[in-house]
Image (cartoon, rainbow, N blue to C red; front, top):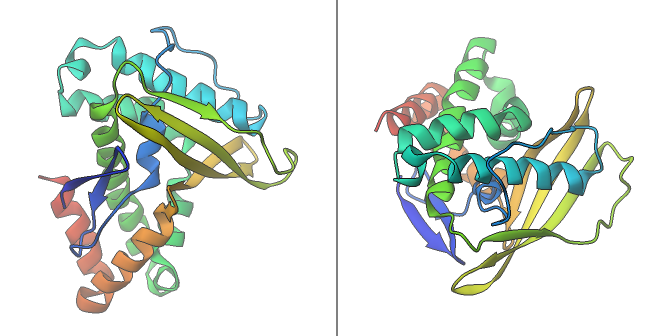
Length: 221
């Protein structure tokens, strides 16, 4: 897998060679006004407020860390794992990406797939964090849904130094512990749909274990 640029964001090539944006990366392109001090994340806040706080904190951490700013991917990975992944429903993202094949997997295979896909998502976020600059800003758009609903989409626009604004949507579920992000849309490309096609191709060729192996091999690079 390799990184490719699309609409100014960093995408990631699929494990089967199909390239596309993964919207999860969009969380990493955050407001330039963020400070080094983290804000308290309220997972039960209004959807727009929740997304903005998580985004602000991630970029603030990046900009306050000399190793991350110098491009140290191991350090960027660690920041992603600390500031972003706690607010992503990894199991649901993986389950929906696997589609009908999830039900064919054993419980052990399901857990191994979640663990392997987590590494892929961290690397995806890290690729975007590495590209963040001092003028990137994410602006939540007026919320169209019911903030009391169990499943909502938060729409935002990402401003860039040298390009038009990029539309980024966050699909979230209201879990017992508050909001959890499980899918993102960058300029019309949904993360889950993108990976579902790639997962299906890999599973058809090499089975579920083959998909797990391919993800782990990519993460080890």
